Image 1 (spheres, helix red, strand yellow):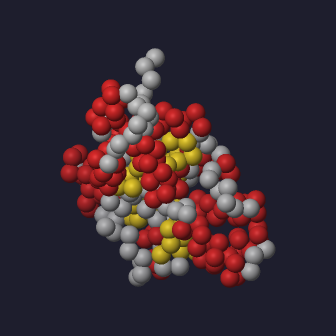
Image 2: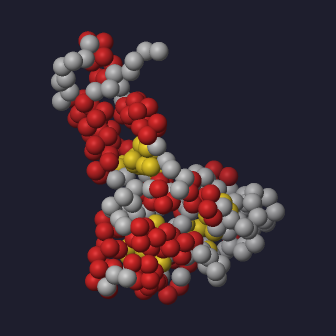
Length: 277
């Protein structure tokens, strides 16, 4: 088997992605081009140097992943729920939520994180909010960790800074990083909700891109499981029309007001939560 050259370009790109969190494809390409332009490494054969310089960004990521997969990690691609921009990110590919990159946190803190995620997916009223309020998050953290209010506030800020949660208007929701890295674990634990499944699953899957939807649109027919990201729904309507793709649903989306998934599902938050991009 031919040995693939692994150079300082790959090492530097991996370190950059690990440090930066989700990165847009266009930025990844620019960083990779800059690293190649500065590439000057001894110890490689002439044909290996040519190989490194001829790689594009996607090839470089694949070379890195060949080294990472056996360790349970991978640079994966995902898309922003709001803009559908392609993003690259470093991910733990474990299927266990507790086994993810929470190594900087104590066992009680990890339990608090798990309980917050459980609360986010506990859809008891059918609203599909996929958020947790600051008050609820504080209650869970106090119960699991016995932290003071100021310590809880610092802990929640750390989770946001680490890229696991986003926050706006007094609510917290799972970030692009978290949804991508925890995808398999969430589906294993809570099950998928699609028009091919019954109502037992709690994790919405976009009819367009097949990724998780926690912010987007739902079919106005409450009995229908079709869900979209907003951009995916617009693309679908342009390509295939506004008839709901659910096999037993007769709804025309253009004839109904939008029904939301996520923060906008809660009318009391719509006055200050804007997720439309």
